[in-house]
Length: 499
Image 1 (cartoon, rainbow, N blue to C red):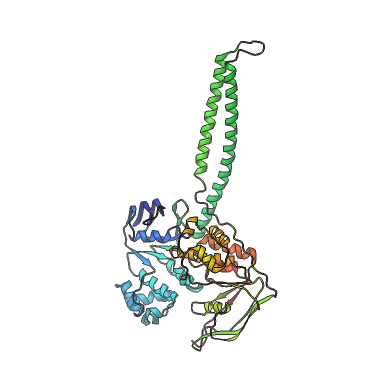
Image 2 (image 1 turned 60 degrees about the horizontal axis):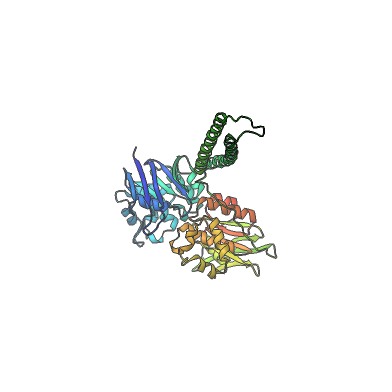
């Protein structure tokens, strides 16, 4: 079996005083299927880039196999998909491509369409298939699920489970459980590799943190008790030593200075023993809880609407160029309901959310939005985020202090507040949009794939918020665990039969 070895890796971006990695040591087998997890901004993508040799670093990275990276950059989107894939895997035969695509339920005809006309989900699947056809390479797969609907995630997880030799960055818990056999975890203080899927790793991680929390509490009590004992011993020692030089008691009794000196020495020895035990306990305590992940409870103050029904949709169909995107749909949104729109890529879920927020789109049927309804919207796209957080808060008319406090709870370091948003990671940008929405007092929260790029801890944090405050929502999200935790009902969208 071949291996990938990282030894004493230390790296900081040019001009930065903060190391992203410091003296990191990892050993991985090239047959492993590794899920790479860690909070946003910790350096997951950076490590993948270092494996590819994109930045200078100190230490050593050695591998018996070359690396391939996903997403693969396609230069000419007008080329037929088959020609693009020939560039990705030049030695693969057409029948091999068709075999791989059939496993992912991709129609053969996509090979002869211009690559730019493929949906994001189709592009993800065909590029993954092509990369796996390059034998003898180790794949670095960076967040493929952001463009996959729920069904595509199931298929892709099953496909990856049959493969070997990759590192997969994903925040979708079920997706990871469905295809990996090892977890590479980028923790606060270290990087660790553990056999098993995400759920088994998380169980072990939480058990370890629970053990360390309990041990930390015991050590705190031990240190307090030892310090009190040290004080008492020191006081006794001083008194005994002082009596050694007195002229006796009130009755002028003889003072045995040798005996008193012996007693004083015993007390001093005991004091030093207690001091050593205190120091060892303090050192052990300092070594604990370095990887504890905090996810403080988020809070929100939604507005109460004056009526039970906020939105009513009847036989609604959105059209582009006179062609219906989805089959007519009817549903209502009542106070406290969280409606999940379900459907594959291209079924018009985002379009329906935009129509709800007031964007003008061609449609038939009826959409009734309650009068005076205040809506807070989180779009999919983060490309518009520019400048600093303070200016963004002012432009968005939200309280800057509250906005930054929410970001801090979502694992933003204070140093991030000094950076421009274009320098944030994709997950951090998404958190900016969610924090903005949480600052807005609204009757209805409309969120379009809010979890793209967002780390697992923050996903669970947002789940808890939604459940605790009974928000009224209409949302799209393909993370099955989140959808089940958050939604009170689902509305399926199906492609129009005109297709």
